[in-house]
Length: 438
Image (cartoon, rainbow, N blue to C red; front, top):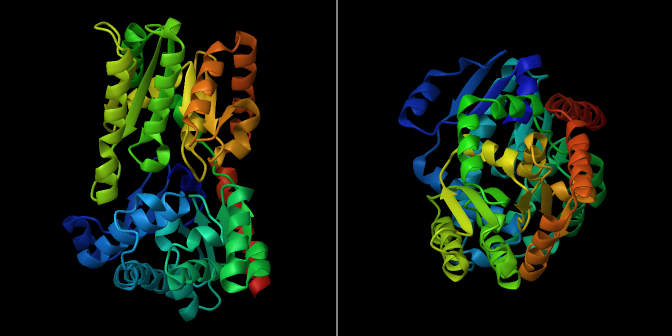
């Protein structure tokens, strides 16, 4: 991810990652190799896993179980009463153990190296490393939301405790926002009686957008070609959403809200449209397959109710198409981000940087980005379709001066941070707290 690139550019880095293909598994057996980015070299160590264990790790525990718990979506589990302890031990813990072994072997050569675990896939690996290397410098950054003890109660207690014990084996634990950090502290207290320790070891440090890279992308020929096509077909005002086909992104409710607006405001018919660019997500997981067609069905219902032979209110594209996303960033009049929950939400931070139309951000209060950008956005409760409809109406009607001021405020806030600062802050927190542990 872009936020970690400064580490590669300025430090001697070994990247430990899963071997996902037969070719990568062959490479994993041969040992680490040297890879290059645009401006740096790094060692890549691939870890091969038993395929059945990896399926349980990824398709049963990490996604959807942990993801749904941490995004308040447990009700979408196909079988919420299923026994998760088997997949937890045979899949999630087994894969984490493979990563832990690789880390320990790396520490045998460089015992003073900082180890930075990333996200919900690796909650227990730090504890496994700590058992074998008590003095190791371990940090973890969680890129998704955190919930309190009540949220974790849907899981077997042994799993919930292991998640928090794994993170507390680290010297430093980072979250995007103070809200998620506070939830971690509360849950650690309720589940383990370790609230004080969790508070001392954790911090909030929102990841930063690579603005220069985004500006380069916005000027690329493919993006300019997509933008010309969009300009040629766009309505008077354009609402844009750029998401994955993930239930947490809440596209169905967003489409329903636009339909409510069209029902209430027939004068907007033909003048306002919604462009939805949705990247297919996690199609190996049944719950995501179930959801895959729901946004299309809701968009079709809105189009059938309010469309004409020459105007479809909602244009949905489900494919991985980054140039079209950047073109849409440049052309939106309203950007809708109504996720149920998000650790941060980079779309809300990226799109305003290249927007050319003084676009207005309608932003879910369930996103971490709300803490950063709420002052300049129109906030919505993501589960309230009627209120989201009213927020879209308000955004479309804002006067030019208000739109300009909001966009300028967002840009100033986002540009105040950069990926190097984020990475350096994570290393500084780890250095300070590993000294405390010692």
